[in-house]
Image (cartoon, rainbow, N blue to C red; front, top):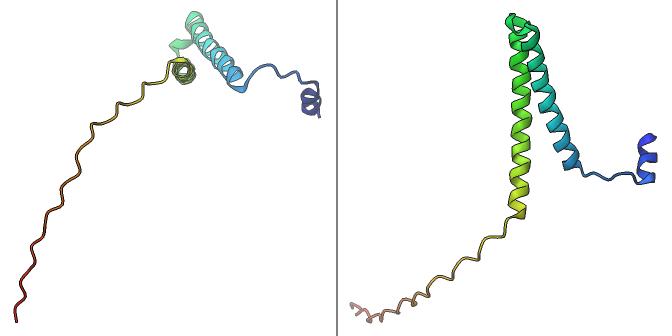
Length: 106
């Protein structure tokens, strides 16, 4: 119901890709902040803390890969299109070989 009201008011000003990009940046920052917090408080010295640090860093890496992919795709879209390929040199058509009549045996 709220979604319909939201669409009727036409408040949508950000694309889905833009939202996903910002969400990814937020997740990277939150994962790195959680890792820093675990290191600063000494909780990373325990086995549970170590695995939590590894999980937070893995989450940051996954979202960083997506951000790099999005940036790379945006840079490709801005780059000029490649030059059309040069026309290959015309090769002469192979000449027809004259066939000699085959003598028939009686």
